[in-house]
Length: 194
Image (cartoon, rainbow, N blue to C red; front, side):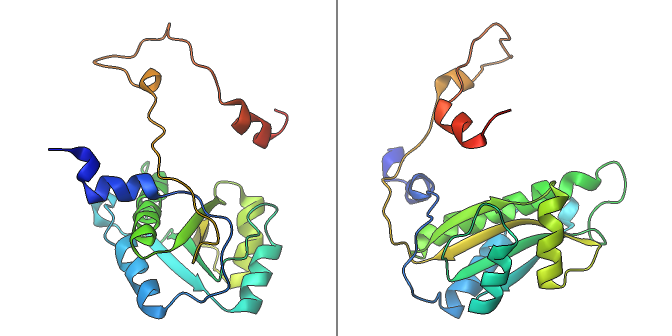
């Protein structure tokens, strides 16, 4: 089997963060397909603690973007992916909702490629100073936590498919603590001073 011919693998390699979009609305049929892909994700004990706020109204999108320090892209569509704490575990496993929502987001990102859309994932949670302004703009109750914003739209830029496979990050059978790693300086510069 030639993995290079596998359409799912190729779609994963084509998924890139897109930050520039053309001025074209995303059709409702594609929005529904993105939501269906999200809700096809695995979830612990089938709790499905996720909720999605679809924002495609220009004025509401602008208000949402004004709450963000980073992530102010001109996408015509945003999904605010939330965790409903009334649906999440209430015991020691209560934070698993973030894994469930992350799996849903990854499904949407991959589905977007197949739909000819670009996307970019903006994290909010666990930084409550990012979550609270979003909650205020979108009238989100306290028991629902906005975890992330995912922008979608028709891309105005093209990026080559790629994998970032790095064999130095793979261990076979057990961890090797003596192995040395170098950080990616580009990413460190983006983070700013630590």
